[in-house]
Each structure stands twice: as structure tokens, then as C-alpha cells.
Image (tube, rainbow, N blue to C red; front, side):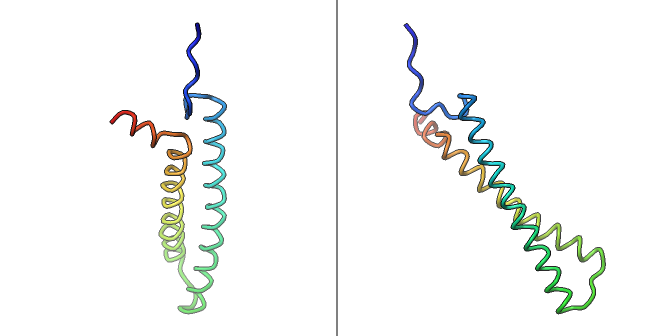
Length: 95
């Protein structure tokens, strides 16, 4: 007799894992586009307000704003991944 599959296989099922990671990468891709647009706009506004910017200031905007946006996107994407694959419910079962 075979055992029935779990109600929500989560990342144990390769097909569902591929779908979940593809969705995670898609979220990150869209957020990278948002970050790039925001960085360009931020640099343009800063150059308009303060005049020409040096390369160090431009790198600071890229690292600060872009890094913050992408870090937020990764963490929120992992929250969606954890919730969508049933890992949150699995923790409740362990307790």
C-alpha cells in the first residue's frame, strides 16, 4: 500500500518547488526593474537639486537606495515563498 501525498507538499515536490522558486525570481526581477527606475530618478533629482554629482555619490545612491530596495524585495519574497509553500503551517504542526 502506498502512502497518500501530503496535503501541501511544499518544496518537497520538485514541480511545486520549481513553480515557487520561479515566482520568487519573478518578484525579484520586477523589483530589480523598480529599483533601477528609482535609482535613475533619484540621481536625476539629486543632480537637479545639488548640481553635478561625483562618481562616489552616484555609487552611494546605487548602493544605498538600490541595496535597500533589493534587500526588502528579497526578504518579502522569502515571506511569500514560505507562506505559499506551506512552511508556515508546517511550523504550527511541529509545535
